[in-house]
Image (cartoon, rainbow, N blue to C red; front, side, top):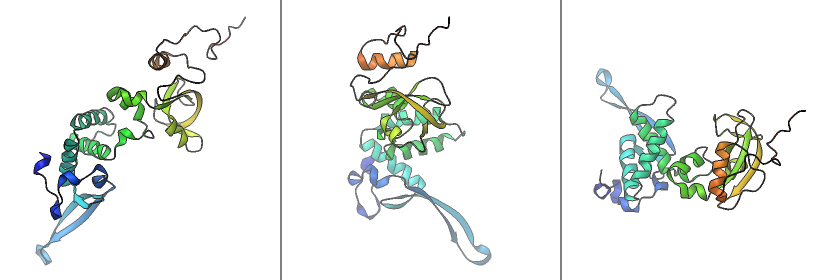
Length: 222
């Protein structure tokens, strides 16, 4: 749908609509009816609650795509659909995946550093955002391999737990080091292939995996 052809009820033009105006707050369901007595028929109505009011689900999807097109973010939507497809663990249909991507897009999920997918998504599709992120290197209780999360995810930890960057489970963690924006890493650097790659991107040189002074090097037993 071309955004220039879309007009909202009440005469409001699409060019004045923002992502916050149409952000999907929650789903709405109404059971409507027509007729009376034996001729009475019921039919469902599904929609989205937004700042603009309740919008029928199909109309909301069209409106969201129009606003995304108007903002020049069609490619970003395609990337988000691809991401949702690859993480479709519940076997949702293509239509449901697209609707989920539209919901995430209008909520600007990729700009929220508290999102568990913030680092992997932006490293893959928007490396300039990843470069500017406040990255914390952690070792989770559930998975031994060091991983990366954002400082914002650490700040919103609950009872000392965050979502594991490997398996997604909430668990306790140990901070190994951090990097604020493009600055060098502070603290010890985990000695693993993925973290050597991360340090190379951050500092411009490879980590020395054979450093005898590394806290990740275990002493040999005599």
